[in-house]
Length: 466
Image (cartoon, rainbow, N blue to C red; front, side):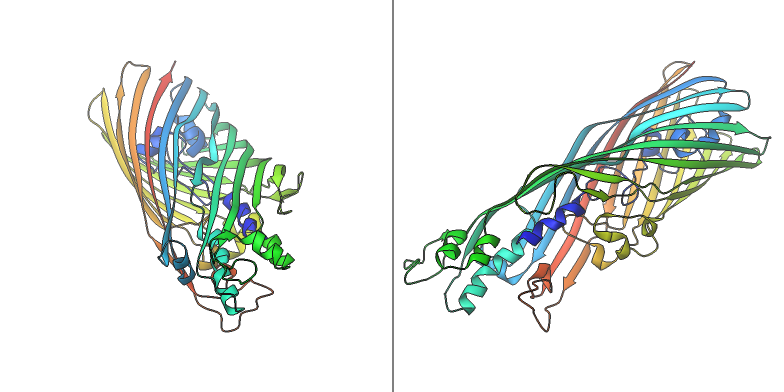
């Protein structure tokens, strides 16, 4: 059962309260929430989404501050026959909630003639916390096999119980600086760099495993008792060690630098095409371990958790008071080094397709809306109960009001509908008990996991220019 905690490393890329790729967040402003197609933006949010577009700001200083409140749920519905020995049903549901009320970000720009300098700060990855108070099927499945294995050995056992818990959170803070230059009336370009700082904490336990072995000497009554005590008294030292309490409490930190390039092309006065490429970012993550009786998280150990390269392409067409925008994102996930080499279980990387509109009602009010179609590109092997990726459709809408000539208030609502993913693990024809690596969560038997989630984000922000 020590093997269970190897999965906690995978949790480090599974906690997110944002839109975007497997690692990267893309909703860095309230502008994105009310219209996700911002890849050719010429507003202040372009400090993140389209740095080359900042050259179309008015001369002077521009500042934007956003807060997002994100609410997510994660649900894993697992069907595995031995679960019936704990609670009477072979199907169990494991849930976690992620509530992040304060998620701030800001963008700043100074523009003068053909030059613009800008910066932004945001949670570029992670940004959430997930707590599975009743554990996960990968924790419980091997424990549920104990009654079967004892009964097969002639010791009738029909029940088990346990305490399990997992909590994880991760933030990747990004501070970005850009320089933008207008070469002529058609082309402008930008170069930038982002410093990323990763911090995370993961703690969990598997303890107080109880079973009811009917043994004439060690447990003649057949009552529930400690599995560790039973195996210890029976001289089964290996199984005693496996059923001892397990606990992990580990914090992780790391950092990396992301260079980026931007290009804007304006072939027509009312048409703008924006491109941005963020290079892949190597991040070495260091363990700061307080408790680990599994031996899997040595204090000071360094592992990779890269941010993949990202290509964005966008277009914006303006027709009087109406703006129509579209975009495409490709994350080069297979080229990044992810925990447990999970990049090998991804086909070609995640893709996003975006479309939106914005309409200026008058000088005071504007409204906008848009959508994002996400195709994750992962395979069945990638999907784990602690960290999984689902195809989805996101919708955002909102508006803005010009409170003064310098000050604008933005509000938005953004939600995501996910496609459930069903992972069926067939029973192995040959089960190697010593290896304990085949079948459903290493049990050798068949089982099914259904992965689902929900996501809602509310955003409020202000833009100020002077």
